[in-house]
Image (cartoon, rainbow, N blue to C red):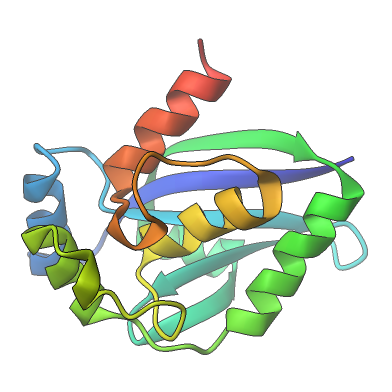
Length: 161
């Protein structure tokens, strides 16, 4: 068994992070605007964060990540070795893909035909795919239409009740 953490955050250090505020407002003024997945590499002695942020899907060391965000909540859970391998394969196969502004508009307009599919990602879509395709945890919406709030509600109901 291996551990995976799904986290929720918002940026710090910026005077007025417009994009984060817009996401938080759309979600009904949540404390978070971003979601990510974190893994622990025992062989490297490091935690690694996987996210869709800025211009692309990327990996970042947790120390640098935590220097730039306020972590609001994290859900740590165990997965089988097989599921962990699927997660890591998904992450490696999709690292470097572009961030999808078009998917943001698809969510706002609730039009799934605008989605980019698996060519580009937003943070919540990336995490939803990992949960659904690799760990068999499904959301009620298509991964491209899932918001950070949808993921938070899902994980809270599964792991905190």
